[in-house]
Length: 432
Image (cartoon, rainbow, N blue to C red; front, side, top):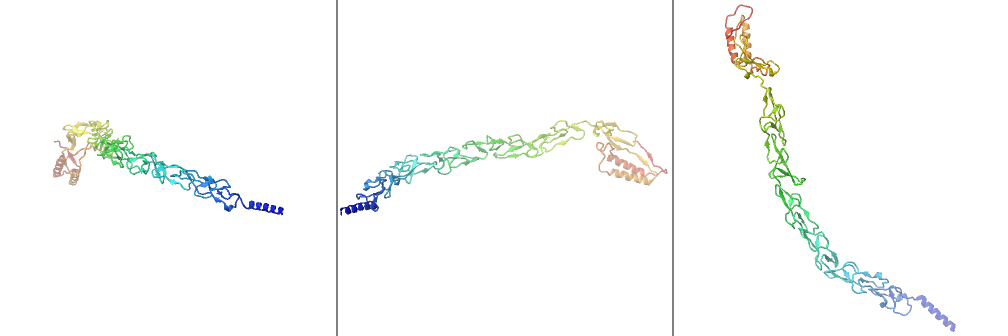
């Protein structure tokens, strides 16, 4: 009997041990000894426990300050969550974090408190930030403020903006740098938002804060170190100066940096617009100014010097060189050998003042038909429009109209004479 009771007790103990256990980590039980698993209670919010067999919630560990734990039955400190940036928790074992008040903030997670926002920083949703470039921050509860037009800041954490210097502008808020005035514009004042166009005839000096008047006879040249260059030869500057030089017309030219064009001197020429006046070459001349070409020296004249306004005579003989009762002998091929000679006498032909003329004579015809034909030849010769020129026609004789008329009248008179019954024409030379 006693053996049976003993065995029953042992069986009961074995059964209890088999069907009960201590509470695992994160749980506790107020019952003494081992209990069933469904009798364990989780550690409350804000706490955790990594140990087993806890008998009360007080044995659970509090989450540290700066953390929160909204969960029940946490079995590790990792279950405690850091307060996010902009929030804090000063007390351990809490289930929430508090937001930093306006003008206060913190940086990073797990904060146990907030700090007053210093100058150069600001808070956004309780999170403290360093002021970005182009903005200023006064600190505390002041918001971030963009730099106004005409100012800038290129640094973070700025508490003030910098005015744009003369020659530069900022045309919008929040600028991190100022913009230079574009070409042809300037700004002499600081802290400005726009540039002004330069006055006509002027250029912007280096830096864009002042202008320089372009000298007359020059053109604006952005590639030149000075910003302008003198107009080249053959051109003139505009008034007021601009980016172009005007070409001088043909027959004129100019010197570098000119404001007007000058006529080419005598002995010079310019045949194209924008060209230069050049000397006439040898054997050519120009006796007029503002010319576009040169003239050839006439026959009997020379010019061995360039840039001459006249030719030099070779002193060749001309009909005007001969005296009264002389004629020009121009039969030589070399004109320098021409000379004046006394007029012949008692011949078929004679001359007056250097020109050879038909001398008066009388013809006795034995046949009226021949007389008529000769008269026709004389009349045709008289009607020839241009007299012979001994200088241009190889020394041929010149018949002057007065002498032609006199000779024709005499021939007509001669034809009224009775014909002589002789088979041949008899010529009788009469001397006057």
